[in-house]
Image 1 (cartoon, helix red, strand yellow):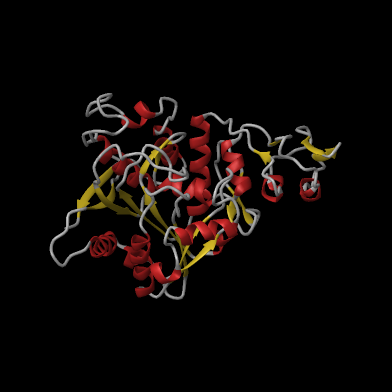
Image 2 (cartoon, rainbow, N blue to C red):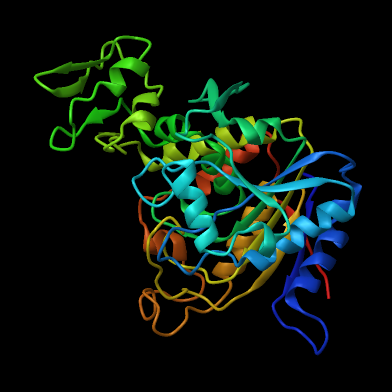
Length: 370
């Protein structure tokens, strides 16, 4: 019989004099964060800072609690994320930091610094070999994440329009990929140039090591026969004219995400925290958020990201749909809410491929922490 991983859980109820932050700190202690050697170690706390206009992202107060726990254990925490592939408020480090600050992720509020892991233009990456990868042979991971000694994921568990669930594996895998890494996960082919946006500046031609980007008649184009899909042209384009086709099948996208998570986590000290609150239908990358589909459930922690994602998904699926939400009246308890929202998401692939890659098990024992 497969050995079960322990997933620790506490609900969102509080008593007088006992805050949610205190409960989160207690949860992490019970889950064993103190067994990690943090002394004088750099600890990357991987979090999503939220897109501008979105209010479903985790409050920075939770990040403060995790950072304080690391510091109490002798570590040096920092909050981190990589730049986005899409054009929004987090496509380069300057705008990313502006957005993080706008949403409250400042050193004063969180007690630690924010580092954008893949640098100014999303090109500061480490190539990490992926042993046994079905689709990814060499993951492109933000350098600051790989430079860290310990990785902690602090995840807002939610639904996701492409992957079905936005859990710990998604937070680490997709989140820690550089812009080129995100292109590899999302794209079945090569980038292309939106001609109406291109100004023919030649930045893409200067950064391309393979001669795939060319400028003719003041417009750039990509020679797919020469292109290796590194995505550096996406990072340097000042007009966001170079973009991904975002055409990868969801099942393959999920497998690539798992393989990127493996690149980040393999043989490294790690700890995972997921909050199942404000379970929005869409990712926090959106510049808006809809009503949550279920009531706030609780906080979960584990050393096993696969078991954690499974436990969080099970918790969501065990609750009734909230009146007024986009699924109300369309499903009943026992249905697969994630697939009801996004029929092509294949979210179970994340769990199954996570097991195959050795990230963990879907068999878990839920330990409640008061």
